[in-house]
Length: 319
Image 1 (cartoon, rainbow, N blue to C red):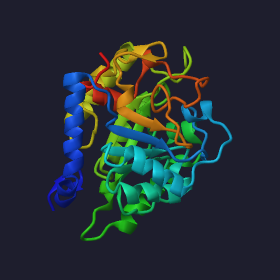
Image 2: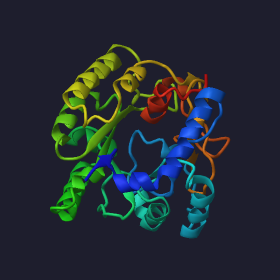
Image 3: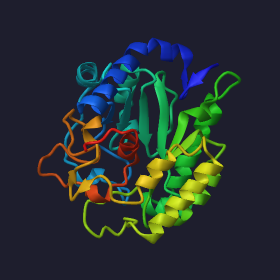
Image 4: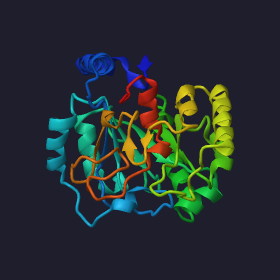
């Protein structure tokens, strides 16, 4: 079967109106400085079964219930469907709200990914593009960040999914991407992590921990250590060009301050990713921010988010 970025040719043809709309938006952004969202990030869950050391989500969390299925369906149809090319479902832990994940897959088939810690069983969902499973290095450092036993549970669930759903017609490993957030605890285990998972899952994408406080001990600051990590990643990109999802210029960008000043985006195209919290409210200044105007904000001048760096490298910028 012919595939384009993991999508079948028939799917691409059926989505032609959406792609034409996005080309029009992209031209408006590049030529006329318009501001249209191209992607979306949605927190469908306000609960999580882990409390990871580096997680931004807990910083601004409040005891609130999430919207119901039909409320999300209305938001999808009014704000997302036909307007953005891809929606990343996050949380909290989205697999704790499978009913909400399913409605996104129904309304926007093959334009949805689920960002998950992988400690809950993975189900094959009709309309899901891929699972984006968080892996933070080798077993020891992953468990140090996410809790004892979490690495083995995640690894088992990934392999169980691949074994259960694979057959002669379907390769379930293609549904699994890994997300690695690099910080001061795990930067020495990156190569081992990449080597371990290559050939077992589809891709791995990396980003750097973005702090919310100055002198965050988890931050891998700009300088020699971070430069060395970037060089290692560039070598791994040459070694595994199809496995490492990041572009080389995207990795180069993350070796320095590029996104903003203090907690204010300047060159970062934060508006290009529509970010909604569990109540459907717009988060500021970006996907790891908050809808609460008094919420703690990420430090943009130390941003390590690869999604915004990717857009920047495609020429989508504030300035």
